[in-house]
Image (cartoon, rainbow, N blue to C red):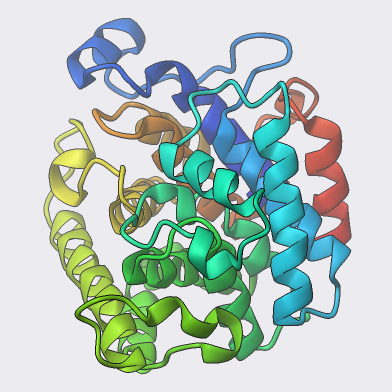
Length: 329
């Protein structure tokens, strides 16, 4: 089984394909690469963005704390995020929320105070895939870890819910779910978890002006994710016109839209993984994050067989991706 490796490498491949297209208009991408988007890695190594870098930071924290306890894992995540923030390789247009939160985390304040509670940017869930790959987590632990890694930087309830859903998609695909079944499984998860606040993992994060209960705080996030899944279902129910995937499910700058649009690409291209990440890279929105999530989903479904064999030696951070893939395969 190589599904963990397939997921992590797929995420990096999508990230690399989307890196040069992230800030381009769809018409310009289509003119440069054709309507299907870029299907070939460029560069040696093919460079990735902060999406892959922060995914590796999360992976390292999970490895550092194999028996997850909220305090210990929060500290491990803090240290790994601060290493990323200070790295000279952190020069790939990183998200403002992550940078702002890391600046606060460096002051050793409680992470709930460092978190940017108004942000539900896709930086929360573009890095969550490793949480879905740790087979030893029961569902409650999985959910707590998925939300915690998001909450250190993105404290909005939708960032938390979308991160859990993104990791859950990886988890069920690794366990053998069909890509076409994932939207329905995510919808069921939303309904099951709508008023469940993970206090053990999140502590006082919910205590914001205008919020009168833990359940009311987190329900807002699940409701916004359900709305994104409604748009995903509608987009999948109509014929694919070959155009910009963002037209139906959103541009992906926010967490629930990155999930929906990345999953749209994965479901549409379940039998053509390279086409799925290429299509994710050919969007008018946050192309690298959309494509990296599409790659994570397709790789979790198919394993390393999804990807051209020669790509494994050409992607940046190949050694670290392989090490974590081996750990969780």
